[in-house]
Length: 222
Image (cartoon, rainbow, N blue to C red; front, side, top):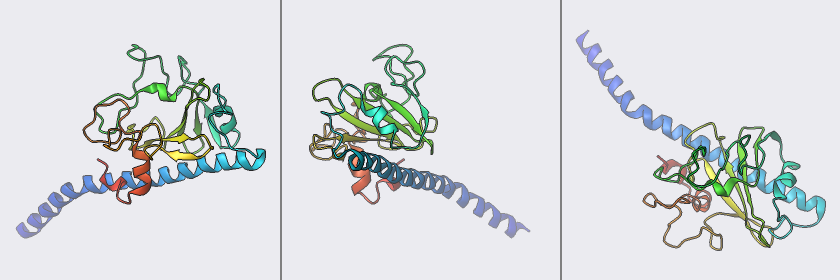
């Protein structure tokens, strides 16, 4: 009997040591699958617009926050979250920096800093799988256009850039470029925007290109 109890105790200890790692690996695999799916969904929406209209969506022809309404026609939308800027009905309201009502829902890659919500306040909507599309569609001529996605939805953690939240940039030719690729706004040769150390409020923005190119990217998340 004593030997059986000792064996069960050892099994319990081993299980306690390995279970957290197994759970973390499962969650990261789910994030990887959702990331790849959403990358494809966004790309397909842009391609469907091109096939139907004969032109690519670019920062020039979607200026003045037009992108949201266009994309919604080519995606399976569950819920319209409004714009985001000073919008109490938004999924991710942005009331400006240091405003007491700001929910500060997203953190940067290393979880040390609250991120800049100003990148998400030109359109938001939830897809039928629960993922959240967030748009930056500036008024400037031509404006900056970012399409971001929270691949498991804003109601599920970790809500961190480079973990479940990923950014893409629409270039002047209408190409969807993973943020962090050379030529995107958050490319940095010293990894300032995808670093375990940086306190920049956009740290994690450049992790999208790594999530695509590095086979072990998601397995290394913690």
